[in-house]
Length: 228
Ligand SMILES: Nc1ncnc2c1ncn2[C@@H]1O[C@H](COP(=O)(O)OP(=O)(O)OP(=O)(O)O)[C@@H](O)[C@H]1O
Image (spheres, helix red, strand yellow):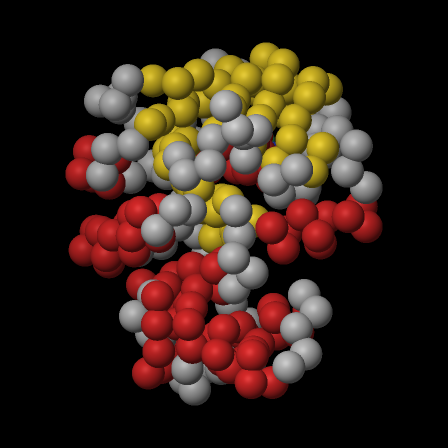
């Protein structure tokens, strides 16, 4: 079997000195899609933050896209983030720039220099999320769903091996949530590995995927019909 894209063994997830999740064992292979569910405060975001290097893995073992989460140094975290795409509930776009400017900013920050390659890449990811014609709009001119499409395009810029989405539909109405989920589903079908934290039962029912649940300080896999 191939090495998992994401692996945790007997991991403990902390917020400062508070233990949020213990005995976390998780193995996600290339091409898999997992939901991460659980009540408010159960530890979903803390787990996600540990995976993208925002919280330190203090105990247990863990690796993500070939980075050892236990040994990773502060200065290596930007390199880890180039290999994963992160999508947040609140989009986190730069409001003083156009869509093109937002995406260009990320490419330049990750070492891209050639102007025409930058332009081609931006067009490619905008095309994937159905926003190619909107590149010169400012982010505040977009609806929530459109902003999330841009955030997803941004996550795709460096061809990530894994996408971590933390409540990507949390700020969207039900119809727009479905559209964004359809997009994530297409991206998954194109071969990407996705871990998505969500409260959205509608989506879990409609787009059935493997599901992990945070509850009682632990993480476990649940049957498809689990309730949030
Ligand atoms: N910055 C922080 N400092 C200390 N404790 C925190 C911090 N952020 C979260 N916590 C605590 O860690 C626990 C897990 O919170 P977390 O945000 O991971 O839950 P969640 O499942 O993502 O919740 P939600 O669904 O509301 O986003 C909670 O008890 C919370 O109070």
